[in-house]
Length: 96
Image (cartoon, rainbow, N blue to C red; front, side, top):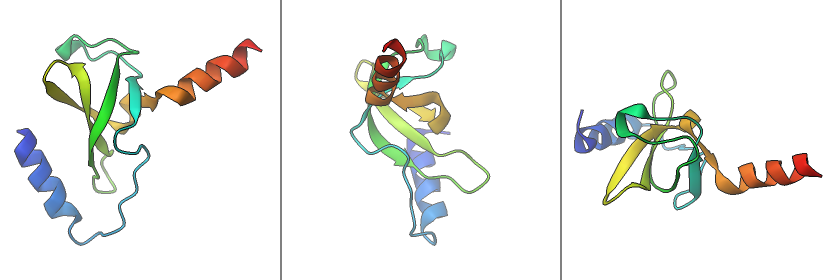
C-alpha cells in the first residue's frame, strides 16, 4: 500500500471518530526501540514525528518519522518508537 493510499484509508476510517488520541506529539524527537532490517535502520536511530495515523481498535496506531532516511519518511508502529527524553531520564534515574 502506498503512503497516499494509507493516508486516504486512515482519513476515511477516522471520519466518524472525531476523538483522536496521540501517544506522541507531532514534531517530537523519538528513537527506534528495535531494528528495522528491511530499511537497514538500527535500534536507537533518531527521528522526528511528522504524521500520525490513528488506526481502528484492532490495529496499532502509526507514525511517519523524518530523519531516519535522507529525504524520506519511514512509517512505524507506535510500539517501535519512544520519546528521547523519556529514555534519557530513565538512564539518569538508573545511574543515581
